[in-house]
Amino acid sequence: MKKQILCLASLLSALLFLASCGTVAEIGPLAIDEEVDICETCTMMVQDNQFSTQIVPKSGEALKFDDIGCMAMYINDHQVNGQAYVRDFYTKEWVGIEDALFVSTEDVDTPMNHGFLSFANSQNLERYVSESNGKEVTWKNVLETITERSSNDENQSTDN
Image 1 (cartoon, helix red, strand yellow):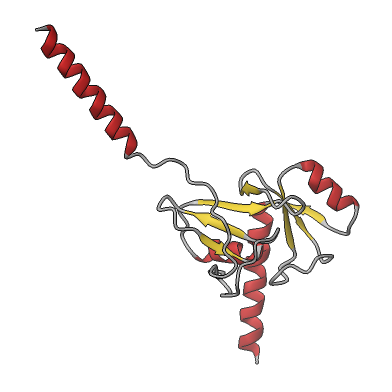
Image 2 (image 1 turned 135 degrees about the vertical axis):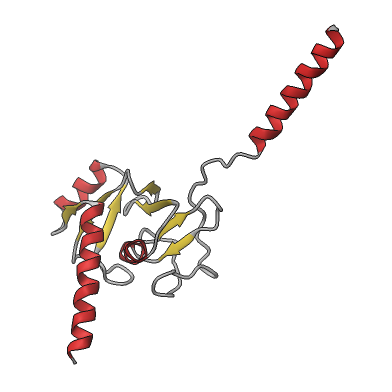
């Protein structure tokens, strides 16, 4: 009887171990390959710099962007199911979108001239704002600004 209980306990332990192997762990940001990666929105090559962003769905196949504005445009236009990441302007450290801080600026030429920078912490954001004409904005502000700009572009092209 003890052998049967021991075998059953071992079998249950093995099944629990195998079941845990099949769970999807949180997938982090993927490396940028400048030779291959193309922006999902504008189709420009994505550089491994402080402007690159990405959305990583549970499948693990990242959607990469060359500019914060391009990712915002994609999010506005598509139902996105994944974790979005931006990079700290100074350190190039990947930051989850919910933890990032943003600045709107005309002082830096971003790849698609959307003019948004991201920061991993308030010290980096405050450093940038104190040295520039940048203004702190929220992620919601970024999304709204991109929507407004897209609407204005559409209206201007239909007015001709």
